[in-house]
Amino acid sequence: MNFVAWTIVACEIGFWIFIISGLVTRYIFNQKRIGLFLLAMTPLVDVALLIVTSIDIYSGATATIAHSIAPLYIAISVVYGKSMIRWADERFLYYVKRQGPKPERKAGMDYAIHSMKGSLLHVLAYVIGGAMLLGMILCIGDSGKTAELWNTLKYWGIIVLIDNGISVTYFIWPRKA
Image (cartoon, rainbow, N blue to C red; front, side, top):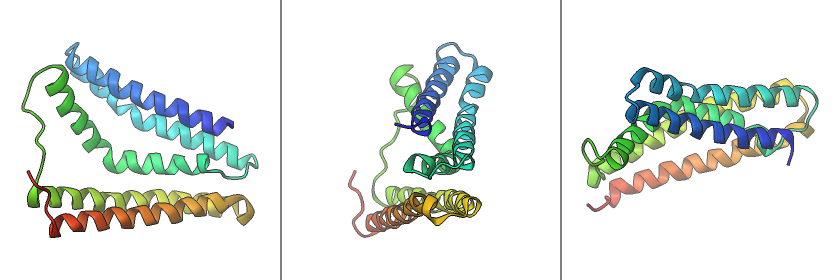
């Protein structure tokens, strides 16, 4: 495994350390500001990953799937970050602190609308991450070194289409309560 792949592993671990420590600080130690600060550090982990990836590619490395993950992480963090933290907040409060309402399980049209909103956010993440991937491809300027970036863009596009297709089915066959 190369340096970028190990950096991805380290960044993923760092991401979860910031999330868990932010929630624990926020709700167990009642330090709301410090907890929010720790939660807000998660995008910096993604930026660190992008910097390492960019340096590696700029130094002449051939892009691998590991290199294409950095733009995906950043796009997903930007688009889903706030809702992911809200989701974690709700569950942490209910399941760990035994406070607050039980997180509701949506059904019917409520779930269909919720699912479609998530899928449309996936399209936005694809646009943002895709723009970063295209930027990397243009900066490298060597099709022999960017094939994996193109593959990521292609396969992610297929996944976005499937995700949206699944969301559409919930309007036809609503999820039961």
